[in-house]
Image 1 (cartoon, rainbow, N blue to C red):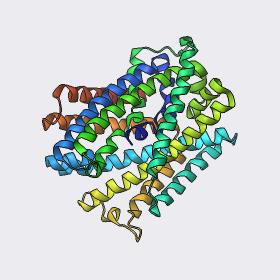
Image 2 (cartoon, rainbow, N blue to C red):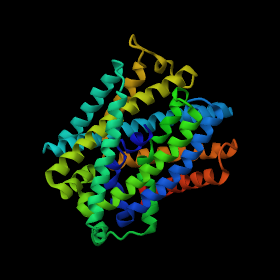
Image 3 (tube, helix red, strand yellow):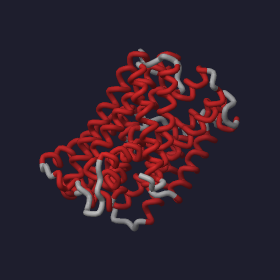
Length: 379
């Protein structure tokens, strides 16, 4: 679940965006992001076990007695998850339209259709099949790692360099860490299901760091391998479908089809899971009086229908008005702020190792600052 939550749309959505910023330093952006995510995962794990209940950062704040902050954070989280739904929808639509050689305008239509269909599945109360989800996660991991392996076998680091006129260095790698951080959103979803886990303290203590390490290594080797296969400039030119281009370079039409299927299935699964989890987070907050009561409304199928419809509708609007780059950067900024807050709480409540949480706090704040400077053209 944690690996799927991160890779669900992460690398498919963000690779082209971060390469456009960091070029040959992209792998460093993913490494730095992984370190910050690992430190933040340590804080999430420790805080969840300390309070012994589900709810993530929202629950941590209420347990600390900061109900006013919990009220703000739950709205920020709902906004952040809605942004990620829109990113996954754009990814779904882009890969689907590109694979079927359809006009560019159909990509948004396909993304909107994916949201509508998956929101409908949520509304009729259909649960995801556990076996299918496991096959999806490990299947896309196999495809991504195979793609990376072929690229690394044909070692060509010069293809990672952007065209002349786009010099990059370590500073751009730091900006890239901020831009790409949305790719690490997902592991914290485990904190929402703490009470449903078997041997929850041990499970979450092992699952969070292991998932982040596996995901970070996957991102690094894919950034290197796919970049060497397709070339940095080609990936930037087709940033919405970067890995499909790399798949075609690796294995021709077979690679193109395999990556396209993995991307669309992965993005669709991520849309479904994110809408499901976010509607239930809003429901919990509404029951606590932190959001309007309508978000706590359930229909005859015992589904929080209002939250599902609102989140899906807002995501559709974002698909219509936003490009992949703006959506990724917006989502990254939201989760950097939330992760910084969680690391701060872990230090304040003496829940986690002070120095590990401090790495997560400084890294999150620093990446958010670099991202803002990038967006305002100061960096």
